[in-house]
View 1 (spheres, rainbow, N blue to C red):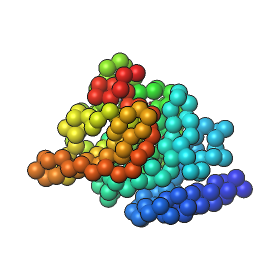
View 2 (spheres, rainbow, N blue to C red):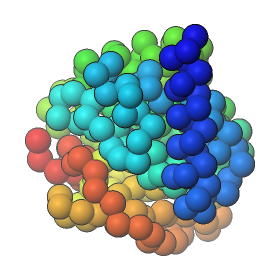
View 3 (cartoon, rainbow, N blue to C red):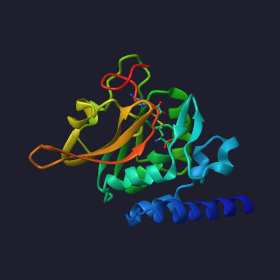
View 4 (cartoon, protein in one colour):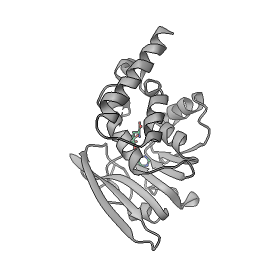
Amino acid sequence: MGLYLNFEIMRKKMVQEQILARGISDRRVIDAMVKIPRHLFVQEAFAAQAYSDKALPIGEKQTISQPYIVALMTEKLALTGKERVLEIGTGSGYQTALLATLADRVYSAERIRPLALRARRCLDSLKLFNVQLRINDTEGSPIGWEEEAPFDAIIVTAGAPDVPVILTDQLALGGRLVIPVGADAGQQLITIVKNEDGELLRESSVECRFVPLIGKQGWQA
Ligand code: SAM
């Protein structure tokens, strides 16, 4: 009980100091971050650091992103609750849990099987059953989820050398794609909006640093 209360206080402090203080204003995103227990998604040894202002290792040389970057990317998707969302890079499943709370249905792909299996257990423990996970662990698997396209929103939580055309093709008219783009050492967060005429409008925001997106139209493993 004491421990639970502690995590709840840490989570509220995280939202106050890292999310609200840096200008995130989408009330639904803020409420979801207050609600989702981030400490469940990190390895037990890192639970005490789960609400700190940084990315953390989740095993398999991968990371759970810094809370502010998660909030910013989620806000840029402008979700209302009705969307079908594609996530590339399930990782710990924390971002997936937020998306599942904020949209109608989430399709999330991960290339590292043990991470996907652990994420599934966490999502099930929170009763987030509107998430379909897919493991893309075979060499040369295409990025994306063509059979379920088009998506109202796509979020890529790994850094790509450029915006993969395979993903903009899977975006619905009026849909939004958020993706870190640039060199391995650092990327820029890019938002693409596909307007009703099918044109792609591109906006860049903050600098960030993600693990690489692996695959065709990504980086080599
Ligand atoms: N959003 C995650 C979270 O909340 O924990 C963090 C994801 S981590 C920064 C990036 C993930 O993308 C890694 O787990 C990595 O294995 C995965 N990844 C990289 N390339 C991929 C691909 N082509 N398809 C699916 N997942 C991929």
